[in-house]
Length: 427
Ligand SMILES: CC(=O)N[C@H]1[C@@H](OP(=O)(O)OP(=O)(O)OC[C@H]2O[C@@H](n3ccc(=O)[nH]c3=O)[C@H](O)[C@@H]2O)O[C@H](CO)[C@@H](O)[C@@H]1O
Ligand SMILES: C=C(OP(=O)(O)O)C(=O)O
Image 1 (cartoon, helix red, strand yellow):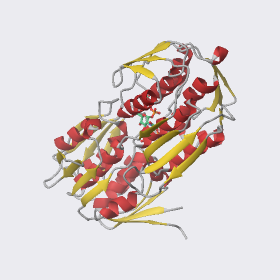
Image 2 (cartoon, helix red, strand yellow):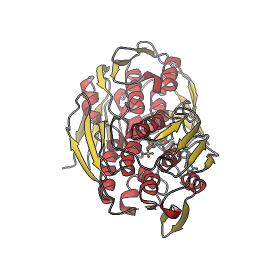
Image 3 (cartoon, helix red, strand yellow):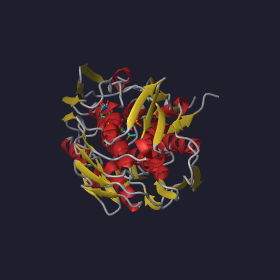
Image 4 (spheres, helix red, strand yellow):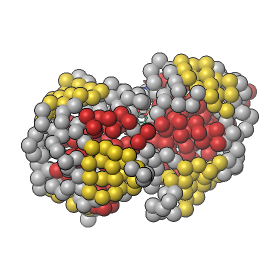
């Protein structure tokens, strides 16, 4: 299995081009199931999860064709043609590798009137149930049965009537599934307390480009008037705000100066505000965002929250960065109950972090020391890379398949700004 080796101590400077967003790609790709016409997605990131989603679409009878493997103006370009579907089953073997597979539930219901999807189960960061996905679809008229580890959803008469649902807690995935199902429902759907993440806005914009009618985009109440059919479209995946935030932390922790080319500041205000509070210089440039750190970092207090709050997907990277801020920082994770898996690994590198329930107190240390560490989930892996960038000696990060789910050509991007980092195989 591949590992990443980092020899810490380099100050990073230069430009990093930000890729298309994983979390947008994974909700834009299933939209292809809603139409018999081609859907072309530009700026698709080259990630294990995007490839996995392509395989799932193939399994359902859609063809996928990719142009370009190197970054170009538009990243990779994927065309999905779901002219006719041959299956409405998302099998366990695919879903267990990629939780986001659950996002075929809504569009399959919308297109085929039925969907059978393996229950995704939990993962390292928490329990992650899908009850809200199912309740929203039920409120829109779906009949739901659970059996043998699968959820089977049916639209009586082949098309959902539509309905009103208020999410008791904000869920990105449940909002996405409900939106996609509602787009081709017979009637109108109103979703209240919907997620407002920029990736939801990206999804709404694509659906509208495909002919959907959605009111309230970007707000917490979405009104979707179902259309009998949607058509094909060509659409560019938004820039990855979490990748951009991660490299911003790389600039901050190394006392560096990096321009995040293509990053959209408007989508990541909470991250940028937290960086500024930590003493980092952030400025919008013509091409993206410049992040620079020349003085010592300052300790901060942060709590994760649904958008526009501070993203849970940035918590681990900030924790690594704050290991370098003299004094005590306080981080509270409110979204996932078990998202501190990186703490014991950071501690092996000399970090001083105390976790009590959902809160972690991070006390800045003079130095981190390179060590063999193990990645446990995607953002935890990135926090170990960040720690490795400033640690004395060599850090070896194993289980990097987590990183490949969400960071396109990570080592190449970091080498480009001066990091001493490489990927090595076992053999
Ligand atoms: C592919 C993708 O876009 N993943 C993102 C998405 O995950 P995902 O869509 O899975 O996350 P949700 O927003 O649904 O989860 C938020 C919270 O709601 C709970 N919940 C969710 C659904 C449900 O049916 N029942 C329920 O209780 C979850 O356990 C969690 O505590 O949003 C998360 C929160 O911003 C991010 O960390 C993930 O990177
Ligand atoms: C938790 C994440 O992703 P997923 O929902 O795909 O597991 C993430 O991107 O940090």
